[in-house]
Length: 76
View 1 (cartoon, helix red, strand yellow):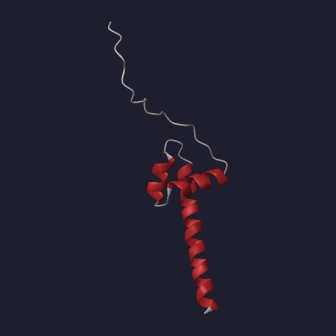
View 2: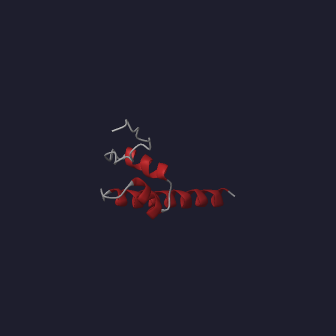
View 3: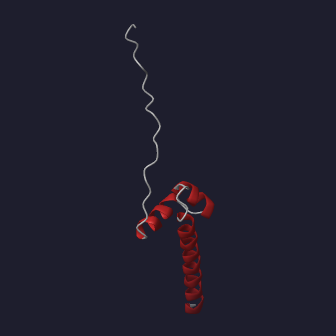
């Protein structure tokens, strides 16, 4: 039983290493967002953020949508 368990653990580690390598390769392209990278690789946004943080990679904050407040007409 121990042999089967260690083979399974090795297989999981190999898959994890492959995902991390794919994310790191995608992070080299500064034009892609973390969400786009997560979708392309097939992992979560949190995984991409965690890998980027581990590698010291930062991205500037993108534009934010304008607030949806209604304008008040002051009679002019």
